Amino acid sequence: MLIEVKVPVFSESVTEGTLINWLKKQGEHIERGENLIDIETDKVVLELPAPQSGVLVEIVKNDGAIVTSGEIIARIDTAAKGLKTDPQQPAQTAQAESVDDPKQPAADKTDDVSPQPGRPLMPAAKRVADENGLTAKEITAIHGTGRGERITKEDVLNHIKNRESSATSQQPDSSSNQPVRKIQPDTASSASQTEQSARQEKRVPMTRLRMRIAERLVQSQSTAAILTTFNEVNMQAILDLRARYRVSFEKEHGIKLGFTSFFIKAAIAALKKFPIINASVDGNDIIYHEYYDIGIAVASPRGLVVPIIRDADKLTFAEIERQIADLAKRAQDGKLTIEELTGGTFSITNGGVFGSMLSTPIINPPQSAILGIHATKERPVVENGQIVIRPMNYLALSYDHRIIDGREAVLSLVAMKEALEYPASPLFDD
Image (cartoon, rainbow, N blue to C red):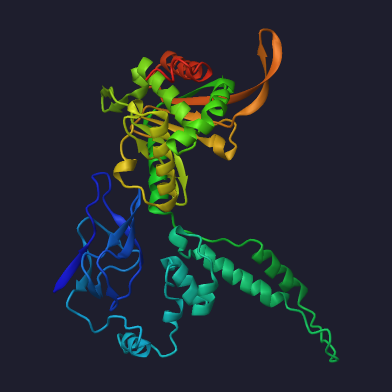
């Protein structure tokens, strides 16, 4: 029976995707549930499992193809068994694969650079490997830095560069009695080659996620009247609370007590006082959200993503910390779903984890405000006429001036500051 493999239905906000890398070859046997190919959208990378066991008899769309929801990309014959991999007969399997294309030259080494088990080559990486004649042994030695240890184009280029460096660094055998003949290079030519090698360039296409990020950032700056207000927070009270409850919190809930949950609670306290900060613009209307879906910006190997913590106001510290840890891990593994990246009424971005001291975050449309957190550092401040050292953190609130006036923006940031400096009441009431 012939089964069609179709692209899964994307969400309304996603119109198309790109086929990244087929993990199975045409003619190979596959088991139901095995991942056939990864599909990259502008939000997530989706895995497409085999709907049935059988033989992949036809690949309709190759690596790099642009596809839409429901489009047929391959066909599986559930009754075919002739090309099923037989570990007892590797020679026959190889022979069957080699006669798939009678026009293929005998010297073609395409199989040498086929994706290795567990470490497949990305399309661009395979092309570079083919062009440079890399063997299967060399490919196996390359450590993949992509998602799931996939070998990227940059990994292959670095391998080639290291190989060339090793070849040029080999010196003549000093134990030999034969005289070494020195060839004087042409000075002008050598200088020109050195200059060219120092000015190399490489062109890498943007991923769909990076293109989407660029599109949304430009959209945000071109459609919203973005303004940023700043304040500073004495983090001593939060540091003391965290130090006091950290061990018992982890013992009771099985997860560490971080800082982000405090900022989320403080932000919600401010959003409840100033609902316009939690609102969004829809044409000529203002949409007031009576729920608090907080987006947390997370750096992933593919770029910045903003997964959503739904109804954050109803969650405890432990529940928030669990969701943050889960979303961050799955962002690194590329396992976030489109639904988890859609929506949100307010966002928080923490540049402090990378050492940022101050920034002006860009609003994530259609939201109207975003909170930027930065590194907490000991600084001299004045208290009661005395200069003292305190752990200070600069907060930045970027807001859409079309619907949010400076008064609401400043006062909401002050409310966040007070909730963090005096956490006993605002943070632990609910």
